[in-house]
Length: 210
Image (cartoon, rainbow, N blue to C red):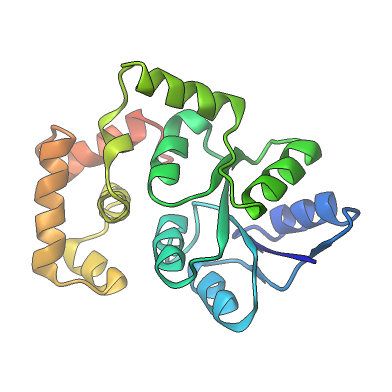
């Protein structure tokens, strides 16, 4: 049996994905989670093969869960299921450890194909993600945020949502000085000069919602 956990803060979305997969032979669902904290607790308590992970979660975000899970569970396969289109997050998530990226408006066949692909130890690339990757490999321009490390992306998204350096330090178990260093690095890499400009950048690229 392939053990699949669903992480999304909307119960109706979790139910929808579970219903899409219910008739597929060989799938079982050890747990569901509505937050990043619940997801990490579920992984500690249940053997899991594939994690279906939303990015927008209360508390610890999907990026936080991705980083923590990658550090602790070598065999776990992580498929990001996001409401954001591939252009915004797919390459960044795959660079930072996701095994695949799929939009939530996918078909049942696409979802099952993605799950089985990552479960076999391979990367799942949707046609659009593959196109983005090809553009980059052939010298096409990529957005600066797509080249951020997982920790830089974590800090960036929290700063863009208006969280303070001290709050971020507490949530991510880092020192204030370390977060401040990340902030300075982000300002340089994204070519902005303030938290307000970080937020503007994130909104312009569709990385957060207004």
